[in-house]
Amino acid sequence: MSNQYTQEAPYHPGYEDACFKNEVSKDVSELSESRKVNARYLKFSDAIVEFCKSGAGSRM
Image 1 (cartoon, rainbow, N blue to C red):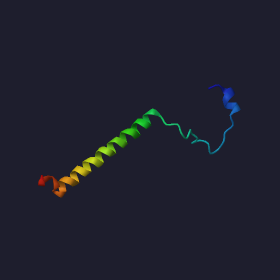
Image 2: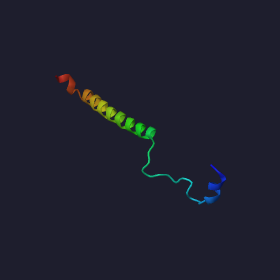
Image 3: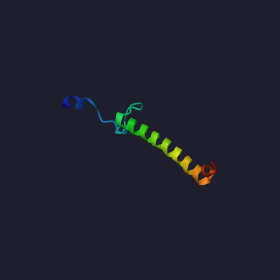
Image 4: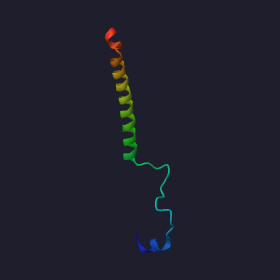
């Protein structure tokens, strides 16, 4: 970055954490999607475990 731009842009306290609200990186979106899928699998496996613990599977 050239000195011209740094001289033109004054410091504004409180804007250190400024970001684009709707902007999400590809890595973060992939991680979020992976977590959703894993949570769905874990819920299903919990349902299977509860079914087996209830003894409903042994009556068949």
